[in-house]
Image 1 (cartoon, rainbow, N blue to C red):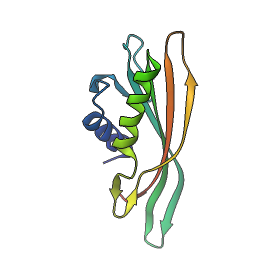
Image 2 (image 1 turned 60 degrees about the vertical axis):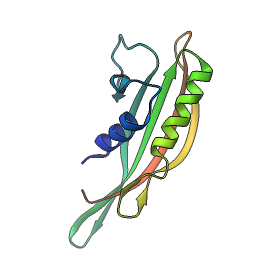
Image 3 (image 1 turned 90 degrees about the vertical axis):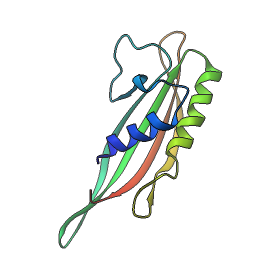
Length: 122
């Protein structure tokens, strides 16, 4: 299972304020109605041992966008609860590394949460 699949599974099963159809990897469909969530990930460090690849240090962000600031904050609470300290593999847990409010188009409010986790060999 890849990190993208893991993130999607946590979000679609735990976040109730955003329909699962409005949770997207990387890009959002142009006609998506509010609220929505978009996530992406990157591998920042690859670990090798004498037998080969051992795991990856993965960073990912989850951005939520809503038409109302209070609604956005409620969604952020659900996202954080869905992901923070969740166990991925072995003893590795997802850690929140930061949050930023982001500008979107008129009448939209956005916030991005940044996470990090070490993923052992799949």
